[in-house]
Structures are given as structure tokens and as C-alpha cells.
Image (cartoon, rainbow, N blue to C red; front, side, top):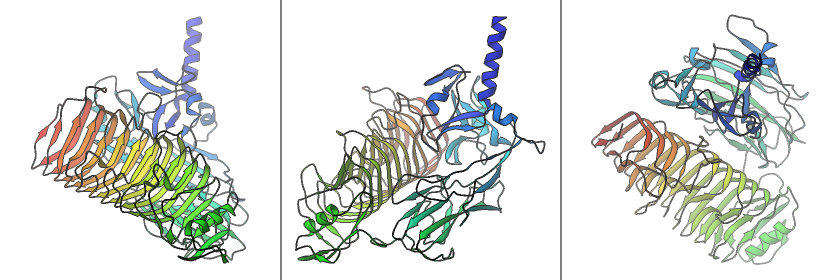
Length: 617
């Protein structure tokens, strides 16, 4: 009887968790049934306990309905249907967002693949190889079925539809819609808003004052976006505006089978008139009403119109010292700070709209933030040959916007190795050229968002991530980067992506473009947990790709033309390279080599023309 009772209890617990999963930094794992804390191993696969999964920040964590919730759902057709309602309010807005979305999947939408003990969703638009759908990796059903027992396709239930709604403010409401010209359902858009470089809020509404900035960051995090209204334009997923009147911004997302969905964001500007969605909001540097403005020219600077002397640095420091937490300094003037540096305090918004020329102070950044929080640098234009152009360490809630660094030496942006780590770092777009060292180098960041890094004629790496985890990166674009060195346009090193002793997928890169220079992509020294969706590499002077002593790395597709070989390698002082999948890759004019053989290395749909192909499997 006791055994029967234990079996019954186990079945009840399994039923309670069967419809719930853990979104672990973008990778889906089942919830554990018998393990109460940490990671577990149940039913021949990894699982995560409810307590551990609940520690993740939004939008990660537990997904789906519990058995008790789903039992109260109503069924309206032969396929399962559920509905839920929620209210979401931004801490920076006084109104709640209102949104509605609907989605339906194909037959494979609910299926999963147990890939050697790790669960991944089955792809909806491809049958073979690895793919990238709904902002996460997926596996084609044919590829999944090729595994030996007990791995393979896991039943995930029938197609379902869901809808959600939230309360609407009295003054405005958000809306979503979809139109289909393709062969699959529209993708639901999840709205996110950031005000003045603060924390992201899952909402579609913002109430701001004139001069404030609003950043829209809807998801999914893949290409296919279009914008109109409220000063938005182009195809970048993230858009920053500073409207002087209330307005609407319409985000359109077209998924990979051609179906378009839309979401309307509402921005309410206190004291401003309302404007139609076609009105231009403008996001100019220095717009609105900054609390302190530095103007003038060399020899004659002003702060808020008052004389501030002939020294550019002193005028800037005066402006910084005269603002409080949450206030903004706009440096409209150009000038030189010499071999000095500027330490920014917590809570400041600091932007340089002119051009700041800088010198070299050993081990310092010309502009730096150390041990502070809630700092935003929406704009920066800098020239010179500094030790570090911008230096950070032990920071939280840091926002860097449009950063333009045209150097003649030194290193561009550096997050320090020997200081406590940083968290919740957002970088919109960086252009960096002419450095003798790296373009952008990070150490010890947990939670990093980068829109793009464009590196030109950079001495070492374009973007180098060290000991960084939980990162989402849009585009890394390098030309003549790391010439005659072992660095690369994109490099992972020093246990990058290592999370609690393992390498779950937590470093996501949408696209890498590399031309000439040294290596294209380089992963080394016990790094991993990386997913690169698309690559476009040509004529790299060193390895096009080198993966050496790295673990759980996936490259999902792209092209390589000429340049150095694609290599899987390993040094003896580290554990052997393992769990690497390279798929849907067209290689012309160079070779592929796996030496020594790695562990669980998968080459799927890789074509080589004009070069040799020597791999172990």
C-alpha cells in the first residue's frame, strides 16, 4: 500500500508539472518532480526545480499552466483552448497596457526534442538540422528522430490557441493585430518599454515628461521588424524616441514564413499635445529640457547660459556637480579634456552631443562609471588615443545608447576584470574604429543586451566577451579587425557563458559579419553556452571559425567565402571541446578540419567547395 501511495503521489506531481516548463535564459527545460532545489536528472533528462526556476528575472522562469489552472480552462473545440487574463502596470507609467494576441501552431508546435538529455522545441518551418524560431533554437523532426533511444521526439500535445488581455487605461489603449500572407500563424508580439535608460517593463504604454526618452524593445528578438510613428523608423528591433507630444508607434513583425503581426505602443507626454502615429517625435541628442547644458567653444564655455570659463573639462564637471539623481547633462560643445578623466555618479544621464577629444591616463577611462548604478549615456562622440575610451566596473542598470568612438589608439569600451561584476547592462549601438586594442571588451557581466557593435580597423577583437553570461546580441560587424593577431571580430573567452558549472544556452548572437582582418569567430578557454544564428564571413586572414576547448556552441547557418580554415580544436590543459553543432553552412574557398576529435560534434548540412573537409563524424 505504501508503494502504491508513493506511485500515486508521484503521478500527481508529474501531472501538476506536465504542462509547465522552465525558460532558463532562453532554453526550455522540464520542471523537476522530485528535486526541490537546483538542477536534477529525471526521466533520462536534465530538469530544473521550481524553486530554482523561480529565481530568474522576467521574462524567464516558469512557463505554461499548472494542472490546476488548466483544469479550469474551457474547451471550445477538438483542439485544446485556454484563456487567461492579467493586468500589467509599468513602474514608470501611470497607465496599464492593453494588448491582445492570438497564435496557433502547426502540428509540431507542441512537440519537443530530447536532444541527448536536453529538451528543445521542434522546428515548425524545417525538418532537418537546427533552426532559430520564436527567439530560441529548435531542432528539425528528422534530425531529432536520428538519435538513438531513449532520446528523440517527445510528445508535446496537440495544437492550441491562447489569448491574453490586460486592462486598458482611460486615456489610451494598445492593440495588436495580424495579417497572413504566408503559410503559418502570426507570431505574438510581447511589448517592452524602457524610460530614460531605466529597467525594462513588460508594457505597451509609457507616461513621460517632455524631454524624456522612451525605448521600445518588443520581442521576439529576431530580424523582421518594421516601424512607423512617434519618430520610429527602419528595421531595428529596439527604437529610442524622445517625443514632445503624445504619440503612437506601430511595430510590425514578419516571421520567417511571411506572416505579419502588429503592436501599437502608446506614449503619453505630460503637457504635450497628442499627435497621430505618423508624427515625428525626434530623438536628438540634447533634446527636451536637460537640467544642465554645456555650450560654447574652446576658450569660452557656458553652463545653462552662464559663463563657465575657458576649460572644457571644468565646464563639464561643473554641470555634473549641479544636477541630482535622475537628471540629465547634455554636452553640446566640443573640446578636449586632455589626459584627464570623468567619473560619473549614480543616477545621472550624461550625453555628449559635440565631440570630446581625450588623452591617455593610465588604467582609467576618459569617461568611466565605477561602483555606481542607474547611469545612462544615450549619446557619446569621442576622438583621441585614450587608455580606455569608456571604462566600467561594478555597475548595475547601465545604459549606453548611440556610442561613436573614432580612436587613434587605446581600447574602446572596457568592463573591468578585477572589479566586482556588473548586471543589467544595455548597449544600443556602438561604432568603434582605430583602436590599438579591443573595440568592446566585457568581463564579469550577468545580464547584457547589445543591439550592434560595428568595428572598423580595430587592433584586437571587435567584441570580446569574458566571463559574461546571459547575453543577447544583435549584430557584430567587423572589417579589418584583429589583423595579424589571434583575436577575432567576435571572441568568447575565459569561461564565458559558464553558469553554475555548466553551459546552458545563454549567449545569443543574431548575426556576425566579418571581412578580412584576423579570425572571424573564436571561442576558447572553457567558454560556451553560445548560439549564433547567422554568419557572413569572408577573407579572414586567420581561422574563419576556431572553436577550441568550448562547450555547447551552435552556429545555425550562413556563408564563408575564402579566408582561413574552419577548425574544431582543443588544447590539453582544458577539457576537450564538446557539444558543438554547426549546421546549414555554405563554405567556399577554404577548408574544414576537426583535430583533435571533439566530443559530440555535429556537422549538419555543411557544404564545402574549393577546400577539404576532414571531420570525425
